[in-house]
Length: 218
Image 1 (cartoon, one colour):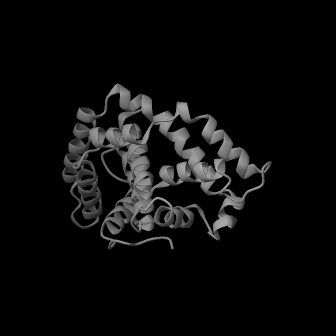
Image 2 (cartoon, helix red, strand yellow):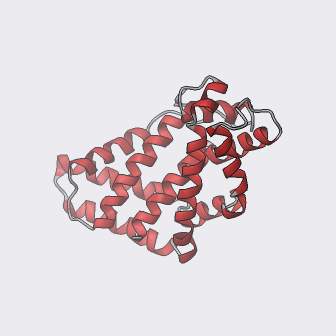
Image 3 (tube, rainbow, N blue to C red):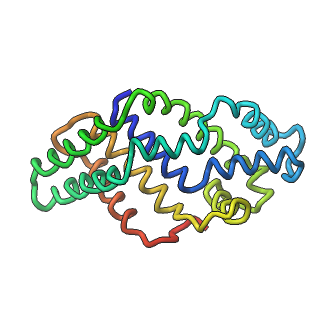
């Protein structure tokens, strides 16, 4: 996997982490094991929850995940990603390929300096962990038990009610993750100029970054 692609996966995972996706899944499994979650014993929902519990030894712990994000992404990563987005967006007005190249090189240098073999190895494990978690949060029977329309609304509700989390910025975080993934995919291709999809992602990233706190899916 290219380093920029690995960084994209970790960045998206960090946004989902901030939303509380995996903490909420852990809480749902706990409720299920204690009989506090109203799903059928032989239902698809129960099967997903049981499988998640049985595979717990194969997953990355919360402390390890947070340490990974802090080590690889740090405080500067999103700033550099935003600077790249600004350079791409400004290109429409100024036509400065050199500014885009400079911002891209700065972000590549940051990724090269912070992404190590342990981080690369963690990406497929995190991808699988998040896929399992989102499958649980999207399961119709579980959504129905809480009257939620989708995984994001369910996560927000349970983050507040079950794990004492603050109101999340789910719309903002989803947008940052989606737009950031596109920008980093372009970065991995090492192209000199950005196409329409990348330009749209750059604008979406800047718009999401400017959203006020508390912009949620509720």
